[in-house]
Structures are given as C-alpha cells and as structure tokens.
Length: 209
Figure 1 (cartoon, one colour):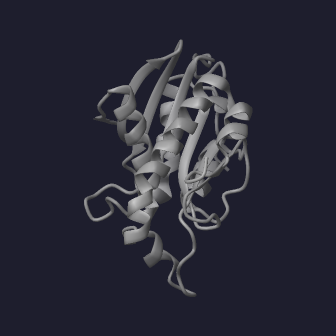
Figure 2 (cartoon, one colour):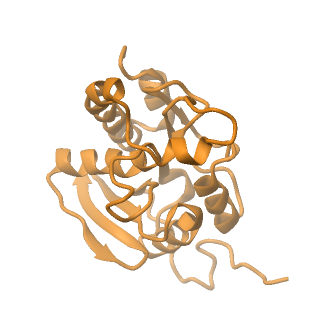
C-alpha cells in the first residue's frame, strides 16, 4: 500500500497560510460541456472572477485566477482534469498555495437539491457525486467545505448522466444568472466571514434569499 504524505508535514517544508483560500468550481472542460448543469461550479467561480475583475490563466491541472479580498489571498480554480479526477488538481494547488483544509471551498452541482437551492456545509459525504468522491480520495478526508448548487432531478431512471450534461431548460435559464450571483456572494462570505456566518446567511433557495 502506497504511503501518502500528510499535508504540510515536515516532508513538504510548507506551513499552511491561514489567510490563503482555494475556491474550486467543479466541471468539465470543452465547449461541449459549457452551459450544462454539471458545470455550474465553473459558472460560479467565473462570476466571482468577474466581480473581482480578475482573469484566469491556464496552469498545471487547471485554470486559475487570484485576488486579494479584505486581507485574504484567494485563488479560484477550474480543474482541467475532468470531473472524475478533480482531486488531483485540488490536492496539488492546496500544497502549492499552502491552503489549509478549512479554507478550501468546493462548488458543485447537486441533483438532490431543487433548482437554485444553495447548501454550504463544513464537511460531508460525496452524495454520489464523482467529483467529490475523487477529492475525498485524494485528500483522505471528507472534512472540507463545499457549496452545493441544486440542479433538481428532472430525469427518468437511468437518465441521470444525460440530465446533468444537458443545458438548462428555458425556465431555468431565465433565473440562473441571479442564482449564480447569490452563489458567488455566498463564496465571498465564506472567505470574509467564515463558514458558519456564510451558512446562516446564504443557505436556502437562492431565488428567495
């Protein structure tokens, strides 16, 4: 069995920076996936980048943009490893940027929540989501914050993959920009105020908050 070196051990010679944050939007690269439900993580970090007026550059394992926000250094990441291998990118950039586990936020779609519902948690199971499953495997823990964006479950048995990889329907498309802005606000609240205040303020239906 391969021994995995713990984060920020003496072997890495890097101590965590408590003012450094890594915000990871999950999705799949390629024009064929753009605008699909499964790529909502990409869309939310894009909204944060737009708000902060920063642009992404392609680096190892993904596209990254960084900015300063109220004394914190924030790194936005869109992994280019495809959804099912997201953990490699998360682990690598956590180590490179010396980000402590509690300062990592994973933004992902969730079929178990109605469209537009936001649910931030400090830790939890993968809920059957392959991106979260790989992150848990790579980090050897489920104790990392995540923001789930509800996409609903409007699919018949055996059609889940088709559903998440499809574009939003016309009704969702009308309301989506507002929900994405709310998710971006929740993300910035996590950075500036901490997870508990962010949860208290932003968990719920984004269209009603």
